[in-house]
Image 1 (cartoon, rainbow, N blue to C red):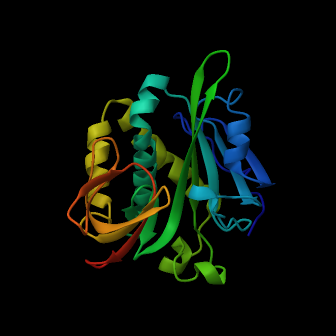
Image 2 (cartoon, rainbow, N blue to C red):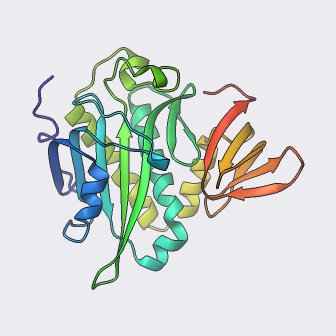
Image 3 (cartoon, rainbow, N blue to C red):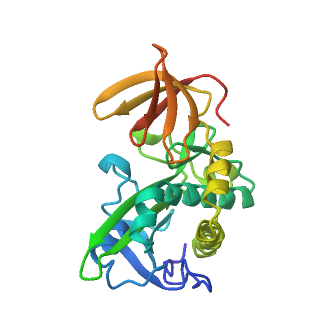
Length: 265
């Protein structure tokens, strides 16, 4: 494996990836993007060959072995009033982009609410959204952190039953720079749909890909554990569920575990 990556990622003509800030190893691409959000142009991609402090939702560790996966953060600067109402769409378009990247490699992935991409129940991608507000211009920045398992062939013991990679699924090894460029192409296509006012269509497509719907689930939210069935995704991105006691609820955040039901695909 050449350690030219990620310095050899080709810049994109469209917004996402028009500018790339590359590192060999960094603590966290999201942390760098947040710290420098005011000086980084919209669409800038911060990419690293490895991370020493990669993290997912709820502060969980994201294993980021050097030159094994794609670890990048995207800097986006929507209008504040739009972002407040539509933050969920940033998770949705990003997850759809990763799913379409996987499909281009012959991998039929699915999405688990809110922003994990899975293959047969095992995670191949995690997405972490963080926002930065304030400053003299009252600018709002959305940082979309994406970690995709590409060439990993083994995982730590605590992940071996829950994680997979493109390589483990297909038996192939992938050029990281080429795959990162393909991911940015997919992201640009999906973000263009969002910018063109197709948020409703993105939500509908997300619903079709969401593996939670119709499944018996365990939802942990604000320390409370709820069991029931996921029945849909609302227009504002909430997971709709019916508890075992028959009450309908809406979760805007939280951790969902699929318990049983239709086979994971």
